[in-house]
Amino acid sequence: MPSAKDVRELAARVRRGDRAAAARALSIVTEERPGHEALAGAFFSDHGASHTVGLCGSPGSGKSSLVNRLVTRLRAAGETVGVLAVDPTSAFTGGAFLGDRMRFQAHSLDDGVFMRSLATRGMMGGLNATIFAAIHVLEACGFSKVLVETVGTGQDEVDVAEVVDTVVCVSAPYQGDEFQAMKAGTMEIGDVFAVNKADLPEVERAVAMLKDALSLNPLHDGGWAPRIAPVSALTGKGVAELAADIDAHRAHLASSGELESRRRRQLRRELSLVLSRRLYRDAMARVTDRHIDLLAAKKSSPQSLGGTLLAGRK
Ligand SMILES: Nc1nc2c(ncn2[C@@H]2O[C@H](COP(=O)(O)OP(=O)(O)O)[C@@H](O)[C@H]2O)c(=O)[nH]1
Ligand SMILES: [Mg+2]
Image 1: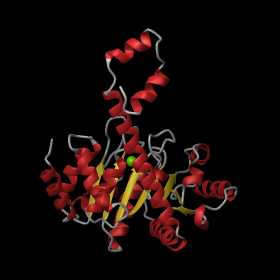
Image 2: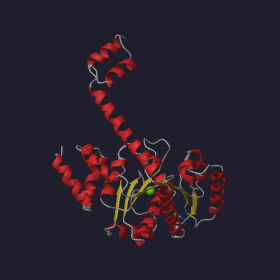
Image 3: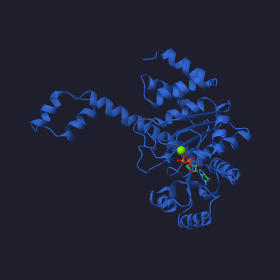
Image 4: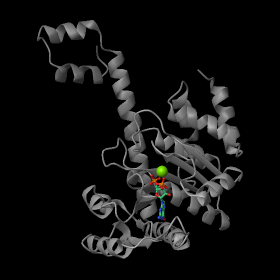
């Protein structure tokens, strides 16, 4: 168990921009190693320091390839970028194209970029409760943008829209993704819809279908009309426009007052996750054989005992 002093020192190193310290802090909070709660608590005050952007979509839609391209673009615009990929499959091998791999290598040598794959237990490409602390570590480390790549299955413990400021839904033609998107409820959460692989034919049809589907949706809170961005991570075409749409959404959040409500929603969710874990753990720690005896003898019910245990009574 790290001491309070260890936690303070590690947090201070991360705040000075120390990448090795950030990597260590990320491992502790995402793998829930001893001391993770104290450490996550130490980073909490950095909530809101970065513009957080989630990229979600089916495996194979090209999220990692797009992240690679976006990082290049953001760096050229003077931003620093932290990336968390919750990706059970490809992680950051850099993608299939030679260009992808070269870009990835360039990023790994760049001090203004930090990429970390969180292919940890129980995460099938969806987010879990540790994502908030992981983001705060990168915020503390000073990155102006934090990108979160996640499949977003709709059945995750945590929904990407509860976690980030801007949600980018990534789809690609030929995947039937247009339909999937509508089914999984991503139509409601996307602020920007990136239709990737625009170098392939069929992209126009995919864009038209998305437009149709979106026209049925009311505007988002604060009056934002979701944007559709055809893009090719292969050729780079449309990446600048996609980056501009992401920034336009951020500007809209600030000017409409919606940023504050999204951030409050993030805080509420983060608190609820901490509460549910703690309540469960604390109540379970009070369970003894005597409780099971009561249940076996039908002298109590799990519902009634549950209430007693939650109230802290034995
Ligand atoms: N033609 C084409 N292929 C792409 C494009 N972007 C990604 N791909 C390919 O699609 C596959 C999946 O890409 P990846 O970035 O790993 O997708 P992810 O699973 O969503 O992260 C890889 O073989 C990529 O090379 C694109 O813009 N055009
Ligand atoms: Mg990926």
